[in-house]
Structures are given as structure tokens and as C-alpha cells.
Amino acid sequence: MPADTSYDVAICGAGPVGMTAGLLLAAQGLTVIILERRSTTSNEPKAISIDDEALRVYQQAGVVDRVLPIVVPGTGTRYFDSNDEPAFHGGAAIPYRLGYPFKNPFAQPDLERVLLSALRNSPNVTVCFDTEVTSISQHADTVELQAGGRFLSARYLLGCDGGRSTVRSLLGIGMTGRSHPELWLVVDTLGDFHTERYGMHHADPKRPHVVVPGLNGRCRYEFRLFDGEGTATDAPPFELIEDLVSRYRTITPDQVERAVNYRFHGLVADQWQSGRCFLLGDAAHMMPPFAGQGLNSGIRDAANLTWKIAGVLRGALRETVTQSYELERAPHSRAVVRASERLGRVVMTTNERLAHRRDALIGAALKTADGRRFFETMAYRPAYEFTDGMIVAGTGVGVVVGQPRTFDSSTRTIEPLDNVLGPGWALVGVDVTDPADWTQASRVADVFDAAIAMVPTDHTVPRLDTVNVLLDVDGRLDAEFARYRGHFVLLRPDHVVAAAWNPTETDRVLTAVTAWTPSCERTQTKGADHA
Figure 1 (tube, rainbow, N blue to C red):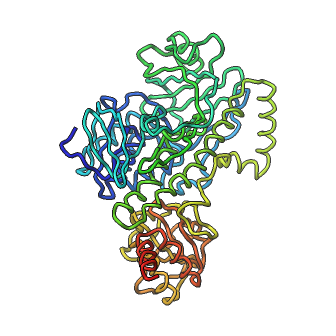
Figure 2: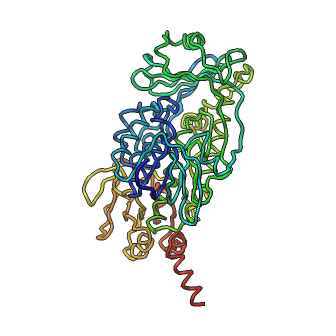
Figure 3: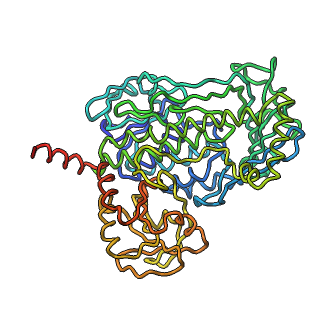
């Protein structure tokens, strides 16, 4: 343990979610301590798919160039029917919309080593292994922890310590949902010949299974087990592994990197915040793997919460804005859990009659344009959008704006949108050319010290002396902002649309967003004193 005992944020858990949160907080200039009861990063390749949203988060954290070398740039998931014939290939509705490949196989140990190396290079972060949190005591503006036999304090505590979360237990928070009785063998292999850039879901009712090729000869196999083939506490015998993978390859014991029998869970924490403590990742939600969203949901948690905490600690946001974390993230996580369970029931059924009926229905749907779109763009996955939280009511809010390439008129370069707008808030005017409207809207930008830019979707180059004009180069910038023509758009640091309004509504929006800041509290206090 270090000599320092006071930090901005303490994080319990040095898995991918905890380390991602630490990097995001450090990028905001906060002091962070990460406490991990294990002796080192995990050597178990648990999570195996990282999506474009997560890679965009690592771009914001400044480490995406370290992460990309350890992933396979994926193209989605291929589904096979009862006869082991390809049914359809599910991928991105708009490839590269967020600036990265859609769904990318990787090995969790590789990611953890990359993230730890980046944290070790950050002067703001301390990582302590062999350090278990044993008590939590909350006070008016701090959290006091006992960890590794010492006491330390932080302004906030993030519980990123997995499904058996110590933080969740110490806070007395339960989980709602169910554990699934079906037993699966999960085996990670080396020396594999698969080179596909996509996962494969084989919906054979006689033996449902999943194959996910990885990098440098790694491959994940998941097989449904039946009565007499093992229990959740058994170590899978090599003979069973050898038999199940024999349809694909021969294997030797030294080529088995990890093998476990596993029952999946569909659980969500009953509350995600208790005072100054928050739950993230598996501590907040556990889900079946069939939608590939377990780790990615945890990274969304970190991306949603960390900038709010940083804003509060810098004095730019009211402390009450942290309450929007659960309002925004919990409904989507519950929807993803339900979707994962539903996908598992449909794709991985062992009932032959239902399986053949499923194949017939999907086959008929794929003969229609809407059906192809539904399956091939994976529209069965819940969209990440919300109607409550830190948003101003209106059309087109609570959704994530993509990251198209754009010509930056100020630098005369072509850059990804996030690089142009920067890591903070941004005000974008879409086809708004009246200088008077910009003067009014700049009051909203001033509240958050937001970057300001104009997007013309009519292929002109407006001359606005005080506003940077961003120009479309491939149709994607225009498409991303088309629904906001004639409006201003306020983007949060997590790329979510916080407000979208006609220039005549600037006063209404200014009042609404100022309520998120301490200036609102000062105004209210001044008014009360005057009264």
C-alpha cells in the first residue's frame, strides 16, 4: 500500500471494467487507487468479444492504439441452423459507424495486461494487488475503506469487483433475476486452425455450441452439456473435451488453456448507487453470453459514470447528477439481460420440434427485406438509448452520435469526429447559419466550456468567423446529423445527445442544463436568502 491515504476515487477490482474506469478518471486528472484482492491480473480468458462502443471508450481513454493489436477486427456473428447450414450473418447496421469494427474477438488476459501497463504509466493512478477491501464507512463527503490492513479515504468508491462483489455485499445490496440450470462446457484452446473473423453459433438441438476464433491460434468452444456429463463443480475431464471438439480438430492436453463447467446467470443489482458508492460491471449485472454483452455493458457503465464524477469533483456539475447513472444504465442492462436469455432460448434450444420450427420461421423472414434487416443487422439487440436521466426532453435526445470522419476547417485535416470535438462537451449547430442564433446558443456552451462546431448538410461552406465548420467527406457526417437539421445539438462527454433544440428554444434549454450545475444551487440559495 502507498503512503498516501486520500484519493479522489477508489476502485475495488482490477478487472477490465475497474481498470477502464481508472483510465477514464485519470484522463480527467483525478487521483485514483485501484484495489485488487488477487495477486496479479487474470490469466483466465473469460470475456472474448469487445465491440465498437468499447473501442471508442478506449479511444477516449487514450489507449485504443494499445488495445487494437490484441483484437481480431471482427465482422459479427454467423448463425447455423439445425442441419448445421449457415442461416444468416449478423453484423453492424452501419459498418464502422462508431469508428471501429463492430464485434471483435480478443483474449481477456491480453486486455488486462494492456490496461495495467497503461495505468502503471499514469502518475495519477495507484494499483494495489493482494489488497482486499474489508470494510466501508460512508461520511458526508468521503468514503472510508479498510483495505490491506490500512485505512484510506476517497470522495467516491466504484465497486468493479465482479459477480461475487465484496462492495455489493458490504453495502447490503441484493440482485434480482435467476441463474440458469443448463450446464455448459467452456473451453479455450491453443493451436487452432480457425481463421474466421466472426463468432459461430451452431443451433443443433442435439448439441448446441458456440465457436469463437481468436488471435494467434486461440479459439473458444462452448458446448451444452447433458445429464451425466458433469456438474458445475467438476473439472471437465480431458476425454470429454477431446470428444466434443473432435468434430473440428484434434487436441492435446497442453492445447487446453482453460476449461470449466459453467451455469449462466441473468441478474441485476437492486440498486446501483448507495451514497457515494457505485456498482459497475458484473457487480451490477450478470448476463448470459449469447449476445456478447457482458464486458461491453461494464465498459458502458464506466463511460457513463466517470465523466459525471469528474465534473462533480471539478465543481462543474452538481453532485445530484451522479443519480442519473442508474437511471440511464439500469434499464438498458435489464433489457440486455432479457435479450441474452431470449436469444439463448431460441438459438440454443434442445427441443428438436422447436428448433425446426425456429428454422422455418427465420428462413421465411429472411425472404423479406424487413426480416433480413432484422436478423442481419442484429436488431434483436436492445438499442442503447434512454428517456430519463441527464437529458433535456425533446426529439432525438438520449441517443449516441456516431463517429464519422470529418474535414476540420480549422486545421484543414480529415479526422474522426471525437478527435475534432475533444473529450468534453460539444455544441453542434446543424445547418444553423444565423450569427445571432449562435450568440444565443453559445450561452449553453459556456455552461460546460463546450467545443463549438457547425455541420452543414447541404454541401455548402458557410462563413462563420467564430465557429469551426465541419465538412462531410463520405456521406456519414451528413447522415449522422440529418435528423437535427436546423437545430443545435448538445453532446455529452460520452457522445450522448443531451439536448436538441430549435434556435428559438435556447432559453428553455439553458434553464434545463443549468440545473445540472452548482450555479443553479447558488441561484436558488441567493433567491432564498433574498426572500
